[in-house]
Length: 66
Image (cartoon, rainbow, N blue to C red; front, side, top):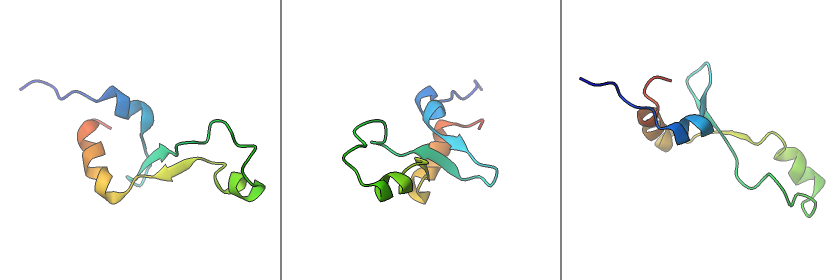
C-alpha cells in the first residue's frame, strides 16, 4: 500500500496543539484595521482560533502524519 499524501494547503494553514486541538488563523485581519475600534483590534489581535469539532475530522484526514 502506498503512502498517504498530506494536503499541503492544509499543512500551511493549520497547526496542531499539544492537546490535539487544531489552530487556524482568522480571516480579514491583515489590513484595513484603522476603521475598527481599539476594542475590536485588541480582541482580534492574536488572530488564532481553534477549529470547530465538525471540521476537525476532515482536517485530520487531510494531514495524516501530523
